[in-house]
Length: 115
Image 1 (tube, rainbow, N blue to C red):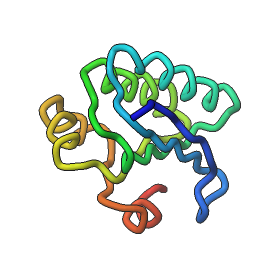
Image 2: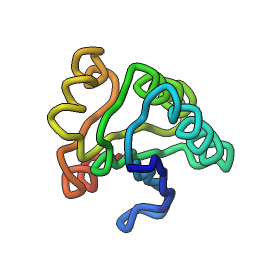
Image 3: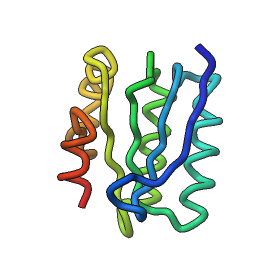
């Protein structure tokens, strides 16, 4: 599957930007993911929800992009993640990401928790 990131506003909160990831985020695709995220943040969109429903695989390089995003938005916004597969969640969990980023199982949970 080709890597792609779609950017949109959340249906329930126009100030929340949703990044929909499709494909794998690895050493080759992580720079494109980071570039898109930084463009969004550069437009003063500092509340970011990453929808991982289409994410097949993530490497440590991809997880590093999440940490870059977090460092950019944590003081004046927020970063949330939703729709992780069990396999991708394991990668995040091994690196302690759930300790610093709220992860939601689905959009309904995200809608209630992205505050």
